[in-house]
Length: 230
Image (cartoon, helix red, strand yellow):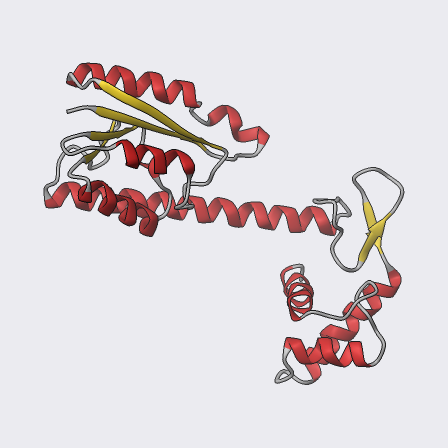
């Protein structure tokens, strides 16, 4: 049984980066585990700064291509392979189709193929997916809070804001804020009007979106932001 080692380092905020196991630490732990099991390491693969919810990753694709019958795909922890239940299930099928097995240095239900092992693996993946989604929601809420306080979160400022001359800061654009109030009022007065309908009406009246026609995605983003900032 040969070991194909797969590692992944997630994109994380700077303040949490020191809590993540580096690629090098994962490789060292996997190599030590493989040596304990008597598995020769056939190859090592890595994905850097790629979310575990993404299926198409060059590192995991190369690792799967290297798998042969009787081999083991070895990961540091199960969440390094995936942080999505459906992505994990698809990868499991590919591993099984190769006649190989998945193992984690932490176990997490990968010690064997018994029903109890599959149950633990499934629960672990659901917990990982919940943690990922919860973290993403916290990040999104924090960004909205910072935007409301006038902090720039990207090079493209949200509609209703303009630069205020201070690097990294922005302020309300009176003209765009008035249009935002108009959009909110249109939606409130007629809940059946579509997002596309609001954009079309504004465009036809000559009220453009930063010089161009309104898109329903922009109208949706404005209404959603107003709702979330209440």
